[in-house]
Image (cartoon, rainbow, N blue to C red):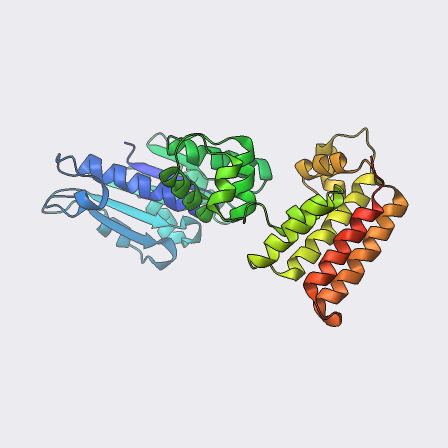
Length: 332
């Protein structure tokens, strides 16, 4: 392996996982040839020392001492986290060591990739440095790709509906999404589908506030009310459901007023909505008029006030709002 691994990015979970993998690889490469890996190999006699430090906590000369050859052999692995926080002296020492690494020493460095200490990031690039980029996962499509990759790592397949349902059920935190993929891969067999995800999460994948809003906007009254009861029974806050209804109706108004000939990607910045959401709302628009959207806005505003204290029953207020939203949409 390269004597220096540079991991760049702000996605904490991906950076941490890449660092663990680099350390395990280094320990296996430097350690005794026993077949052991990772922590098991590091605990054996003659195994490399592993030092895990933060750049901001280092003193001048400390890196050189940590990476110096040991009298007992075995080499060393030095993990330096957040090198963008290194002071000028530490940055200079790190640059020197990376340019000419000591024998049997492996460095694993992490850098946020932002503007801070960007000169150091440039100076660390070189022939002996293996760079791993961990860009922030922000877009809906990127999270779906992440989920597909997690299932692939586990040797499993999941269809499009399943990964979308899992994202709806678990949320956007990559650590939680990775754990969910691992659990589903371990506890199920065959291709992972939407019903599998829904069954595993006991309705969470189907009963979110946004699912309730989507069914209401699409004019599916019975499904919307069923999902509302599921959501409330599984602990979803009525305020969050009311907010989802409001966002759904506002989305109708925004997309209805935009040019239908423009691509969703071109409208995303103007409307403040991701392209996939614009495409979804366009599919929901048939049956909606400007007057119907205005009436639905009023229904949601009234329900929001009821949910936030003016009414006796938040559940009843949400049921009335859903019924009114559906009635505002023309059939067909």
